[in-house]
Length: 391
Ligand code: PLP
Image (cartoon, rainbow, N blue to C red; front, side):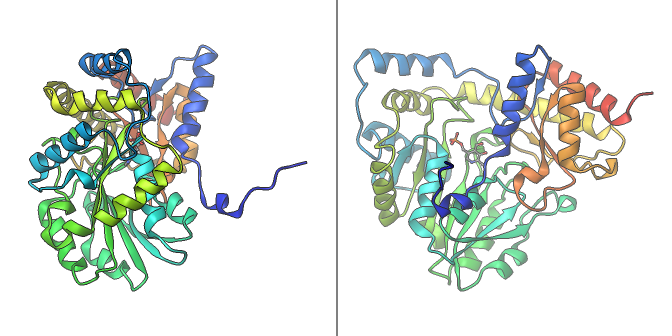
């Protein structure tokens, strides 16, 4: 007999990147050479000093539960890091460490969004936002980002989208999938729009911030009018190549930090102990590894964007950050999903269709700069070959 599930599960959607990952693994298992540009995951290993800190923690016996919100050393280091990068003092009591940034997004939405509440999401966007909003009974209100404007936030449209029912605005800079970055003038203008709407909070997902060309991005947390209504979400997965360690964090308004702590104690208890010590090392040791990776990612992105622009039917702007290219493939007269499938199966290039990122992604592909320049060069040849078809 089929098990019937609780209705709330219907709100959740699966993340397409993980579906494509399964397909890639199957093809690779069958001996196919696949160039993997589908995951938002660095191809770099975790820096060795960070691995060593994690191993040392295990050897020293840090194998037990930690405090729910994280070890004090890491919460202090995160508060200092936020002060350094955003010029904002935050009390470490407002920092909660979670197993990845995703639980922080999930818990924040669960703690804030009532059924019927609206959440404004510029789109295309990381699909998890809308999925967890629906799970909470809320309604995602998408604000389109336009390719011909380099996917910059249209503040008038955001203002129009905010209503009496709005509870949250979700920002992601640099953006997955578009790579667009919010400028200081934009965060200030948005703070001006939201300052007289005390019910509205902002969730600022800055997980790619350290990989931006400047190594930091403008944040709503630094806007006085919104400082106590901003949830800063960040983590170690991307900048420190720690996706599998599962370590992220949030800097939250006081009451929300307590609520997220409640959600955590009822689900994960705490983040992995050794990962937290490794994360402490990542944040406090030399940042040369991050600088090296972002320099290489920038070179790869240039190569990828230039190469894509040389293929007839594809055009790609470079909003300038992170490790994604989000080209328009409208000139190829195929749906994005069909094209992504064709590239995977016919020439072994894995990428994601823009439709994986909520509405307004049709006509685009997302390619991550997560392979060497040599492999990106091969991928470009293969894509050119696939879209030209047999001669
Ligand atoms: N936010 C964005 C925009 C992402 O792209 C991702 C991962 O792909 C995450 C958050 C979650 O990262 P993690 O849970 O690995 O820290």
